[in-house]
Image 1: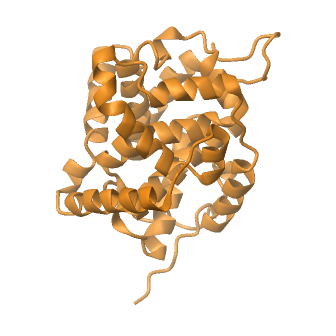
Image 2 (image 1 turned 90 degrees about the vertical axis):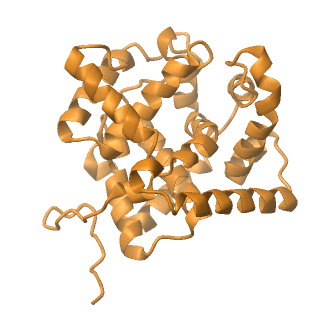
Image 3 (image 1 turned 60 degrees about the vertical axis):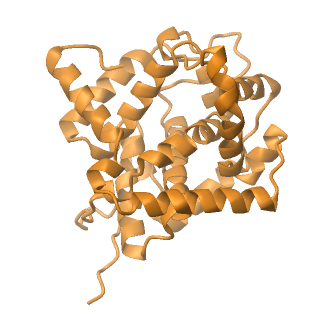
Length: 284
């Protein structure tokens, strides 16, 4: 019997059942993290909000491991956490976001509480997760793809995005994505920040040469073509075939491991957040 497809935001429809761990790959975060940051920050108010942020503790170029922990913890809480987890982390993030707003002399106006900007960030996270899953494992069937899409709304609604702002279905999302991706721009100031990120300038100098070239390869290959053009990057069919083979191999390996192991390190960061909360330690 064919399962009825989820109807995401009709109040009379029950939420579709999904074990989201089936679609979370720890390796995907390794492959796609920096490319996804570039997608997010290519929206100028998001980019300038991050680059000009006065919150030094959240600056990846100064505190890369702390930034990694807080970002992955947010993903873990949004996708795997309970309502209590999400409320606690929202409160913690809000205490930092209140400082991230443009000054009178800022070139670009921004406010970290702007739900439209948060929607773009959430859209990038969902698009990146879907893209990497399909590259590594092939397409989901329609029911699972819709169920995952509905669940992914939490990437925005864990903060200030209202449920009705999340595009109603995958087709509506694809229209939103195409329209807003075309508006993204990377100016010289933001491009310089991206180049430092891609070249791993936040790491100690001895660690950069072995990894920076590989990192740039994955970042370039996972960016949409429009953003490659904005960055002045080149990408050949041969490189694309090599990337596809690597991701399929990684997906084949991950497909035979238990969901708990596949979800690493998100499940570990969720546990860490709960321990911190219980002990009264800072979450962000």
